[in-house]
Image (cartoon, rainbow over all chains, first blue to last red; front, side):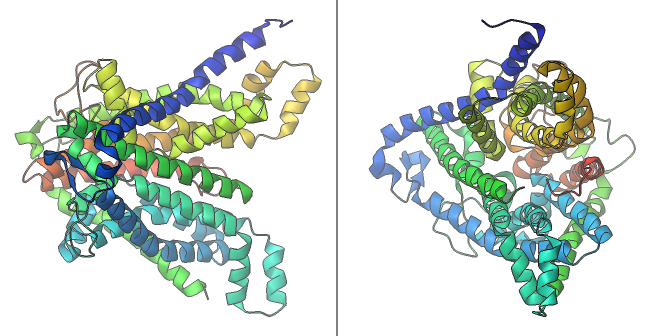
Length: 274
Length: 268
């Protein structure tokens, strides 16, 4: 028999409230899948697998948008990962405590700057140099995910036991090997950081849409490019009927990719003990 | 090996922040004047102040943070303090991981259709508050869980030894002990809310009037900057001024997060 004492009543209330955010996430997923499935049914696999995304002519091929998203994200990772990991390596393994705390605060601030502000800065400095293009979009994204990757992989590197590093140094192997030992020990945490950074890059819409040019075409470094999320933000306002459902389909694709990355990234982090 | 590139990379990232801040103030200074923070915008936002946008930002972010905290804290406490079946915990954990990752624009899609369309709130502060609360809740819950897990198990064991029930243990002992660690997620959520444009653009709208009720539309500062740049020709100078204010708000919130994080700061 349950005894409905006070604690049980209170817990029931707390769980009732706590279920709401979980339900909201499920509702979001169901809503997107429902609308996306409707759109996919109407457009058909052949229509979706086409290159042309021309809503005016009711053509909703997603291939170029996917290519654009992958291209922008991949180049952004290529730019951000070396910078973020070397900064994290220096800050975690060599910098003094004061330098590390101050630099982490500044890097955290960079990560916290609103997308529109980053976008505005990029419109001022990056677009005049590189135009509305793939490379501009990737540079902006790199700027936004570098802090994420740097701080999260820094956390993983700080978990490397000091005696492990001292033991390597005692063997007289040189600092290159010492940092390799540290990075190897922290590999799961670093992998998690990079994967979570990737998922953040895939989802970013505002800043990228301000510099990408948003023209659906095959990726070319110096020409305008459109991604799944920029198409969403540019077209949602004016879309109705099948066009709107097709946009939900784009949202659904982003959601699936990001969900997989988030779960995998967090799992990798937990494996590293973060 | 990694030291020299690391120093350069660290300097690069730090310099970028400084560059952004200085550049915004340099370019935005012409639009800043006495009363800028309180006046209504004129000429579609090209001149005048940002009073209504600041009010909308305060209302939307304040209420959404409050609402998200109201559901996140019970969820986080139930997750850490109750011995739920492992399968259920895993579902909640995965849902939260996914929820943290869901992009703002996707929450915007959902909020516009569900709160704006289905619930009939249209473009309004209320739609914006509810959408933003959905977006912030997983982030906040994850932060709360981290804060609660840092509380030493001795607290719980001592309470159990004294025969205190789980509810009293959780709310009278564990939460108060964890309280300093629970403030950082609040600041983090407020920062995310202030910076959000994608989720609010299609829910709270781009109206520049002072809202008179929760059912009126109202642009937050971020949405205002995005709107100025995207749809108002010649809006760039005004955007610099508004973005400079947004930068200051971010700076204050980020400093608060760094101060409130007791361990060295790694999370964003």
